[in-house]
Length: 121
Image (cartoon, rainbow, N blue to C red):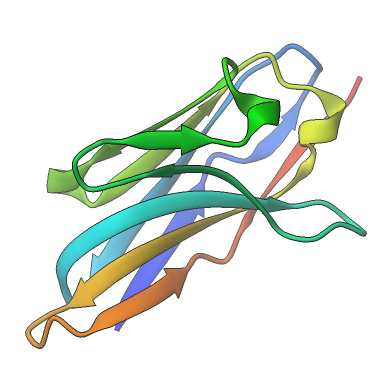
């Protein structure tokens, strides 16, 4: 079994910053791409940022220049640094990863439980 656990959500005023972390654990052979999604009430889940195992990143246009995704492969961790937060960033943020399970290397798509981010004054 492979698990993803997010942390770091909370409430912040507009213009503030939050740092989300996602830690993978369990029977892991390798983690390929890691992603952060978000879902606001009444909206579909949206891909915010992703990072490949070699560090290539991509972002949705609405967060470019404000959010930074990074990872530590040795610690099976991905981080989403969110700066200059806006009320429209309010959502539940989910970590997602493409993994290869140990020892079979069977691919799997794993999700965390989500962490709430609220941006308001």
